[in-house]
Image 1 (cartoon, rainbow, N blue to C red):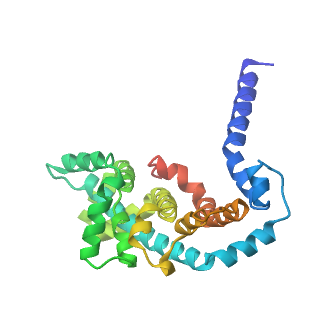
Image 2 (tube, helix red, strand yellow):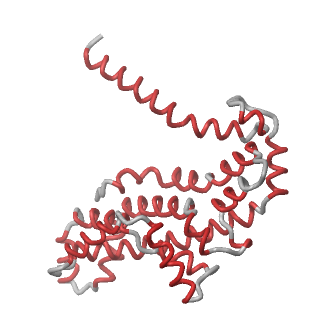
Image 3 (cartoon, helix red, strand yellow):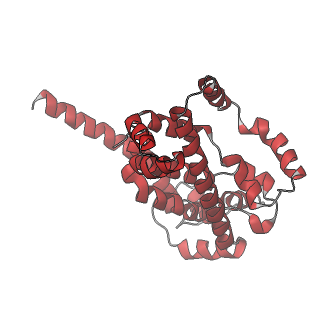
Length: 270
């Protein structure tokens, strides 16, 4: 056996081990959703026969349909808004020249080190004065501009051919037309990655919805799952079923967009 074949074999063995370790929590969660609570606590990892019973208990305990609809509505709205705003910001940081743009961008990067818990109380006080509690706009506003997405789109704009912009300007094209007709199609992989990251982040957002959406009818899936553990006795089979249902939209979005996700994260431009 040649050294190259040995290397490939070792590589496949390591990747297989890492894949099994990574997928085991997901497998355990799905198996737990089919077992009763005592079996889950006992560490059973084989399929059970309590799936229908767990589903029935979940539907009796919580309004899953409404929570799913709330999460979907808030996530789609916030994802569309944040990708639109952050793509324009990232493009502008790279294409337009001002003396202070790098300083402003560095300040944005530094702000990533500030935990959300440190700004949570001032934000809640401000949104209360603006009468935005229990409002969709109040939920979405803090997530419409994220430094990570601005950084991602600026990295993509750095590899965007500047000659296209100059040629379009010479032909009389406006800045909005250049952005929409040239930058967006050429960097579609980055937009795909941005949509994936933003949707997953907003769908799994727990802390901000917990304090801004106080009405029972506006609860999201993370809030609903948290509520299932607040009783005296927790039904872990039902809980695992609720978690399994809650990850379905993010899995679907990732599977649909995964083809361009890696290229988008690396800022590749074709």
